[in-house]
Amino acid sequence: MKMNNLVGGIEAGGTKFVCAVGSGPQDFRAEVRFPTTTPEETIQRAIDFFRQQQEIHGQLTAVGIGAFGPLDPNPPSPMFGYITSTPKPGWRNTDFGGAIQRALNLPIRFDTDVNGAALGEWRWGVAQGLDTFIYLTIGTGIGGGVMVGGQLLHGLIHPELGHVRLPHDKQTDPYRGHCPYHGDCFEGLAAGPAIGERWGQPATDLPPNHAAWELEAHYIAVALANYICILSPQRIILGGGVMEQPQLFPMIRHQVIEQLNGYVQSPAILENIETYIVPPQLGNRAGVLGAFALAQLKT
Ligand code: ADP
Ligand code: ZN
Image (tube, rainbow, N blue to C red):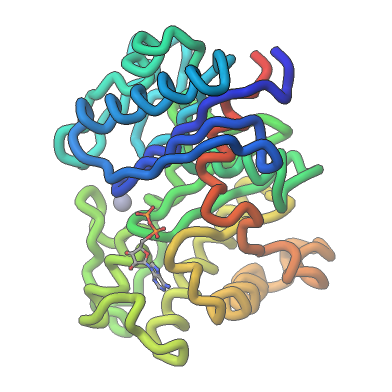
């Protein structure tokens, strides 16, 4: 398969879908965004869009799907292409990839939204030239895509960087956490809705000097220090709505260095942390460009 072929991309989020046709950031032919409703209606809208686009631009070579999960990204598995144990109403055990594949009769690539975004940043963004890095999104939930040694990491299923357990000092932070599975896991303590619930107003309304951000930076930094110890990433990309708060970046960088306490002796961390913990470069097209990159992966 050629690398610069015309493909379809789907960024399937819990709140909205973005579908697009193109071959990369410089060849972006068309895009549509619509809310995530029932699987039937939402998947059909995606199919209709690609059919329409194929009439204009000709046959696509593949469709890449980066989806909310948990999901099954393992091609030989009988559940490949399924959204599996999601708490999202109606979507549990949905054969999303299969429905797209059958309707369009095109090869599909199916992975987590965050693995897709990681791959997009690796092809065209801030992770070019690296082989081991993390893309973490902190929004409605927390999730991470991981590349290790030049390959997206799947392992048993796929990583769940948002559901790691962190030390939780209930004296300084009595908030119980909002993860339906774990209560006070990382996502339960630090995703956007947790910030809103803890402080009694939406995260978007809290002023930049509010104590919420120092605590938020603390949880993120503890999680990152753990990931650094486990995976030895060459860079960490932080995206998602919560990271729209630019004051978080310097706080997180500072606290990561404190958490590691000099043990991980790399100039990338000790001297150049500004280029080690960074925002994504592909902006609001990161997800769908990541889906293009998935579709263009060589088998
Ligand atoms: P999603 O996770 O649904 O794909 P986002 O990454 O935009 O979407 O995450 C939305 C969450 O991020 C909301 O819970 C909101 O509280 C939080 N959020 C969005 N924008 C901001 C902002 N500018 N500052 C702080 N939090 C934000
Ligand atoms: Zn959890």
